Amino acid sequence: GAVVSQHPSWVICKSGTSVKIECRSLDFQATTMFWYRQFPKQSLMLMATSNEGSKATYEQGVEKDKFLINHASLTLSTLTVTSAHPEDSSFYICSAREGGQPRNQPQHFGDGTRLSIL
Amino acid sequence: AQTVTQSQPEMSVQEAETVTLSCTYDTSESNYYLFWYKQPPSRQMILVIRQEAYKQQNATENRFSVNFQKAAKSFSLKISDSQLGDTAMYFCAFMKHVRASGTYKYIFGTGTRLKVLA
Image (cartoon, rainbow over all chains, first blue to last red; front, top):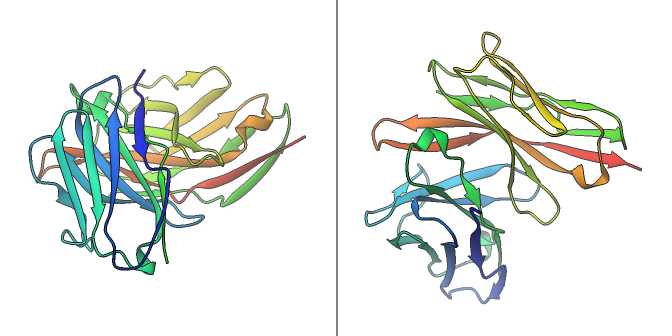
């Protein structure tokens, strides 16, 4: 159980285009979803936290107009990288937490999306 | 502010041997949760084990166990009978309560790259 599906797993696009990444919880309701960015051989950096039906909370230094997050349902969150540039190239990972006592519930992670901007 | 420190960037262990990965953290909270995640070359984050701070008994999951020393704020991971499939990046994580938003989020350590040698 507790499967999180992330799509696409790899995307290459031209500079200036927008890219949407989907994160779905397949067998549970995710009241909270998280978006991380990971540079090579580094730890996960939290970009934003989103609760279903409300605006995402962005971490300091993350541009909310650049990285649009939508969490419209209990099973789906999307991250849109707008007007992507080469410096946005990275590995993006989503995670989801079930409802109930947050402290009892670990985050379940998707497989990640490798984004390459040419 | 909470911080998580993993002082061993890389480690190696012979197959079937035992290895211990260290993690220390800093917090003023009295009750909290700690986690170890594994990130194999496939890049998906996999939950290995978790510990509740109010429980004195160390958590165990098959070949994985922790040595939780609350007073010392230490949370090391022991892998017994190491297998080739244990080769991965291991991240220690502290679950932090964000009072302003009422959400809970992870603070990750910088990771330890473990290589199991045949």
